[in-house]
Image (tube, rainbow, N blue to C red):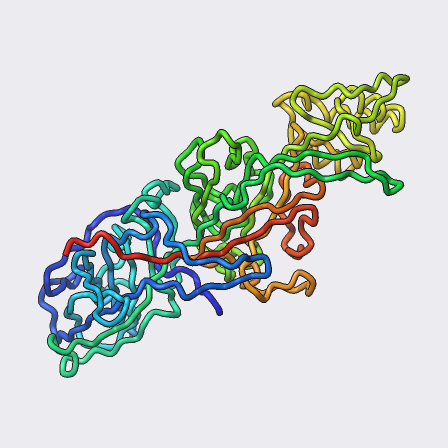
Length: 491
């Protein structure tokens, strides 16, 4: 199944700028519609998009939170098939929707539209977004949406959760004033789903502490490393996306993109603020952060900037490692001991673990050239405190083979899978293998950690296969389609 980009808008602030009356008002025009024909929409809020990937557990549909299922009003937009001009934008309040007698759909009142041939679009909880679609304006079916000025707080409240129909499921309608009278309106059936995907660290997988053994060069076991997951950050989203329930802030913008959709170019992972990632700490609220984001199943161009489909959505996990004390190298002759750095930083070099910078440098000076020692000492400046430059860790690893686990941390990149066609051994990807799809709720949980991650956050290269990433880190995904429930009627 091929999913298309979201069709509606650039604003998500709730506001009822449109007017309406019992017969319907042609928004942006007068109340007298010439050559009027009549239509009625039957809207279903269904979830028929269930997909099970190889990493996905069986699940049941979940309605989600009240904010995610509350409907305030519906905008119905009629676009002229001949010139792509908006002819009619009908606002219908929730109280005017009535349950269908023989199905789970909800029916709109009958309303008047000039006769003609149209493409019909539906938006739920559009708010002031609807004001962008004025009569006689050109309709941009390729438009995507984001929140206003990077502020997503309104988006997470009841009645503001935007829902739309897909572009490919927009309906063609031919209205005739002779055939489609007020007593015999054209009945148009349409389906509406949420405009975003939801990603959540799964409360069903509460484990945050893991252990793994480190092998010696001879094949034995050097010792055990205890690893605690401490934070996560969604990355590689195809446009601006927002994290809700952040422990220090109401929302958090993906750092790998700009602050609006016209700046949707991927940047490197050095922009990730490792001190402001989503906390997974037991004493931090919320314990299981969630995000809402756009689907990423297609390559798209926004504002002239490409966002390729192979930038699959994933999660960067931050983990803190504590090696067994017996694993640390000691040498009385070089005054190398196992006294830990107070901030938890440790070093791995030449298959040896070092508990502190002083002991590591003593070993390195004894086994390296003076020029490299001078360079390494400079790169390790301030590694004992918060003034250390994390970019130095990349240089130390790539140039000198020195792994500096600053504050004991390493980073794992895990990509979210979707389709049952995903084959980790075929070396090929399709758009839907690892695509995040709108109206789906992805619960992710870590099942095992078998080795160290990267010393700094590292996003995959454009040509790096997803299957080749993070062999030391296994993540399980539970995909649940939301059930959209139309509720709180005042009939």
